[in-house]
Every structure is written in C-alpha cells, then in structure tokens.
Image 1 (cartoon, rainbow, N blue to C red):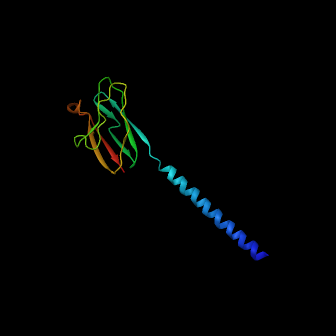
Image 2 (spheres, rainbow, N blue to C red):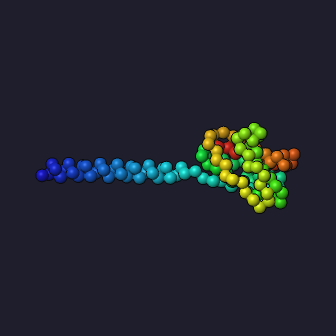
Length: 121
C-alpha cells in the first residue's frame, strides 16, 4: 500500500511541477505582448526624436502642432509612411516587424530639419 501511495504522490508532484512550469511560460509570453508607442509631431520636431522599440511593436504619430505633418521613412516611404496628419489628428499605428534603424522625415518640414529615428531591437 505504501508503494501505491508513493507512486500516486510522485505522479501528483510531476503534474504539479509541469503545471507550474506552464504558468511561468504563459507569463513570459504575456510580457512580450506588442506595445503601441506614441511619437508627438510638433511644429518642426518629433518628440522623442529617437525612439527605441521591440520587434512587433507599433507607433502612432500624434500631431500636437498647428500645421499638417507626416512621418516618411528615408527610403522614400517604402518602409513606412503615415500620410498627412492634420493638426490635432493621429496616424494609423505602424507595426515594425523587423529589427533595424529607420530614419524618417516630415516631408512638409524636411528643410526645417524635422527628422526622427525608429530603432527596433
């Protein structure tokens, strides 16, 4: 009888450890949930000028200025382009699916040095 009890107790212990291990794995997955970041568009500047995000995260540009702005990747918008964002408006979220450094400009105010960088790790 004590052998049966020991076997059942061992089995319960194995199931408990496996269950707790899975709970920990689920917590790690939840920690890696994609985030949406905000970059503010001011008249002639982005805030922050450089933003660091994780692969899978997204950015929404919010126009806090008085003029229309955009955020266009320096590869002529091939990586991303928010299109025109009017004063008080915001862009659609743009998701970054690969690591890299992505410089961008406001094409309306490029001569005023309205530039920024997205760093994706």
